[in-house]
Image (cartoon, rainbow, N blue to C red; front, side, top):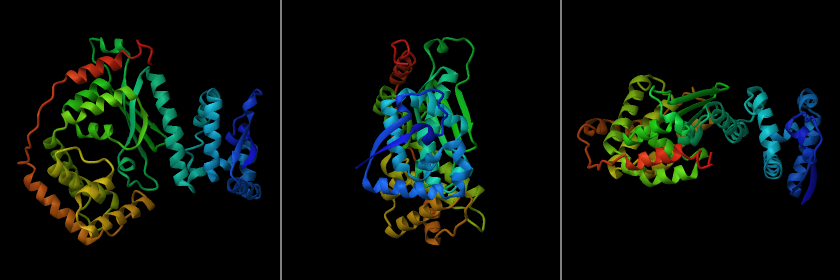
Length: 377
């Protein structure tokens, strides 16, 4: 192990206006990390890019992009030993200059850009939404292709969240806005539903709401809320409504996008996901997995079809949103056969479903809205 000193001002490009012990931070690196750091530092100093950025951002600027593992060590240590510096100085500064979402700086490193957006830009933006609207976010997740697991290199982020107001907000005669929407850098789309609205949609077995609650990619979560929702959400799932939802999705994509000579991968995968979700619901009468490959593994018996789907996903993830690819004819025929089948049975699909009362939902609304009174906000 090697002990190394990193200048925080240089590493993060922040012009500190006072001296403090955390300006230089000592961390331990493995021999391999240390050698890689020295090689990258030498390479960086010889590059035109260093000459361009040195005066503004410091010579350690490249750590954020080229040595993400070392950057994570620095970041984690700073968060633990000087959290006020991280929260009050570094996060606002990085957010102000959009250092993690600059296309000019990160276009050559999309995976690292995605990591920084998800670990920094999105959490910072969520905290801003809380402050600006005087609300508490109970759950914030990814939806869409990044949650499903077949995002393209240039896919945007569809962040969805549930928030709650202070108790007095709920005692007004006039109806209040119950949606918050924000767009950041044209690639991070944030939409939030107020808790009463969200619970009302859950009561109606709104499939989008249920998918939010089961997203595999979580940005912010209130433990009490999550635990209570998980205990009751299955009671409000209506398989008939879900079947109609996914049936509508795949028919919409078929009519709008797939009746063309060239098949857009994105639209075909959306189509296929809707079809396979109907298959899951028919077989299990529960909400289909949000992660697409989990759904595929569960309901597609033919190994060759599963492999064709995985190949298409890999092509999609390595390309762009508008990429056109030749979809396997056998796969198209498989999807169309299932789609035709569910188009025939959807109107007769009526499994037994026990309607749940709103008592548990009312209790969640009451307790979450009063959390600030108990000092949990």
